[in-house]
Amino acid sequence: MRRASAIGIPSVCGLAGFILLTAHPGSATTIVGVILMCAALVAASVAIVRLVFRSGPDREREMHAREVFEQTGRWPGE
Image (cartoon, rainbow, N blue to C red; front, side, top):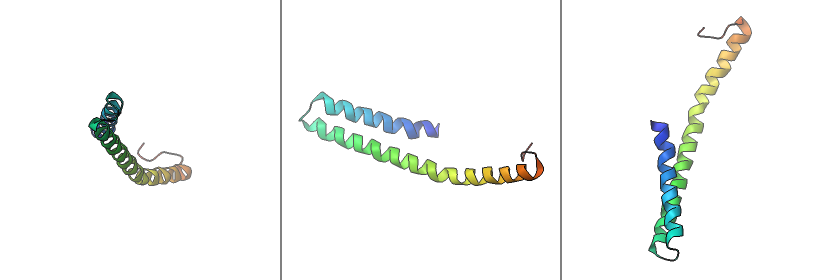
């Protein structure tokens, strides 16, 4: 559920911003559209950075499991 909102909210925000940009160019909705699209870009960037930092421990566990597999011929946890 959390991943869906991490992707869904910036997507909806960016789509709303795009619609506002194209609906009435040159009006106040253009400013709101740009703000929404920038907010979507920032939210998506934050989500990507969080995923990158979260994958570090997973990689370390995988490397350790591969070392154990090379030594014993069995994958840990089997």
